[in-house]
Image (cartoon, rainbow, N blue to C red):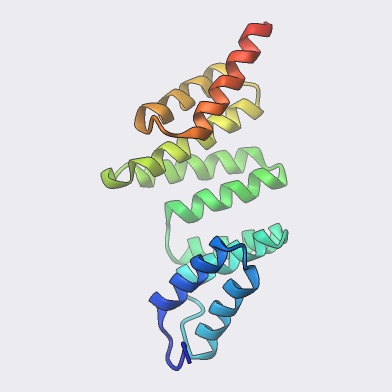
Length: 168
């Protein structure tokens, strides 16, 4: 029996392991067993994962609610980033952009996680791309690659921008 007591580390590990296998039911089960063992289901990390599962099941409004609750308890750049992705998928571009800028600001102080800043910048570049603000998109994508030259998302979008510039 894995969860005879609430084990946050085990639950987090099992959750991500199942997500990596595209086993969303398994990820849900890990959260359920943690809860059934008396785990803190109001903890920001738990609420964040409930939101991720809701998003993966296409329940974006429910997912946003979970992420809002997680952020109300603890401001976190990863949760802001994920909420921005959900907002983008809902077509809410401006609020998504606000979340990404806030995530970038929080991430700026973590020198060890510069690849996350690159990921956030590439998503901001994507938003500018969607808004057809080519210069701003190029700037953010270039920043993303400056931080992490292996950022494939930024590389791809810059190539797409080059195609647009060649047409104009």
